[in-house]
Image (cartoon, rainbow, N blue to C red; front, side, top):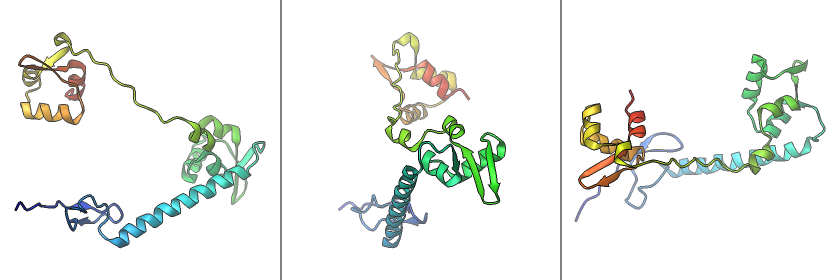
Length: 187
């Protein structure tokens, strides 16, 4: 009977290396049940905090011109640290009422950040599909890549697969787009 060797993995919660207990658990993300529970607890806490921010953002009237930092973070879904950094660098003008009260203008923030509602309604960005001409005059053969960049066939094929570069075989020759190869091996 063939013996399987299980490779060590890094725990997604605590970062320690562990070996899965069996082949069935070889896709495990956590080293122990305590880490699994801690990750589930953290995800639930993040979900509750996000719901609280959404509820807080709905309480702020749309006509309110100046916002506190807490209101701005809830409405524009941006961290406090990012806001304070932009205030300190002068990118966002702010009014400091007292030691613990800072107000920023809603229109200044709207120019930099989309609101939480706009972020939810926005469609996720899809990468544009690249179009290639895989004709021999627009491509290198593997032999030409070998000569030009002084690399072995195995290294070339490994990089082609790693970076999902299209190939075309015509007879005994394999062709790869010149633009992709030049960009990949330009250094």
